[in-house]
Figure 1 (cartoon, rainbow, N blue to C red):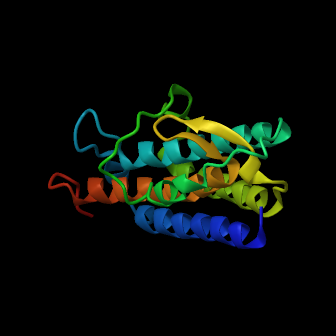
Figure 2: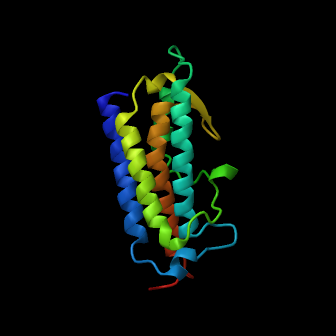
Length: 177
């Protein structure tokens, strides 16, 4: 990863962390658990998913980077799609079972767990080395992405779920302070 790419990834991670933490600060237990509807995730479920996805994706990126490179292949044309994941809320994705909310942490543990997970991700992003643009694995909707794009997805994903949390908070039934 180039230093410019690393700076972009770290910036995405910092921005989504600040946004997520700002949104959940001072929430009541009722607000954490509020759902717009039975099919929608609560704020707690969104944050749990962000944590689980981040752990899962770091492991997949590390495993992919340890594998065979494909130096002649490129999916750089997908960069705009990757950088639009946070704002492209018209497209919905179905989360893999392994990263769906399952009540892994109590509400009072979520922020601490998120901070811990994000700190590990920041170190991972700071230290990962090699040609991330030559290692690939498939996204459920976008097809093959390279490992640099997947690193960007880590930050974009947090921002995408921050927007989902804002939607929950903006619902007419959301409990007010």
